[in-house]
Length: 167
Image (tube, rainbow, N blue to C red):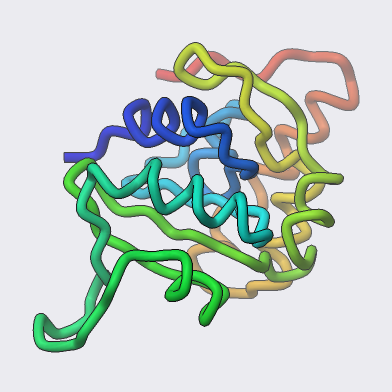
């Protein structure tokens, strides 16, 4: 079950500092890209990591794709020890990023974000320019496939035209 609304509500309620990036950010800007995970870049200060851990704890975060016998403890110490985590939760997959390719850490990502309404919450979402820069830097095949649409959405925005309605 993918429930980004529940993840977003929990992060918002816990006052976690984060920016939505990746596929959900593209969709928020008008992309027809299908996404089945929630990607966000988060601030890595101690207080924010504590809020992040508590916000996601009810969803039973665990390492995605790791063997069951790999030990994993969901706490601030674990988050401090790494930068990026791919997790499975009871409400879907989430990628927690301390760093975004082509942009850097949270502060740089936040500086390239817009505030958009997502599921009824004012949410920091990576800008189209930021998305394009991150997809170009990542240079993965799936990112390369998204670039023409993201560039077209940016061109529409620059002309003052709204993105096409989702089908």
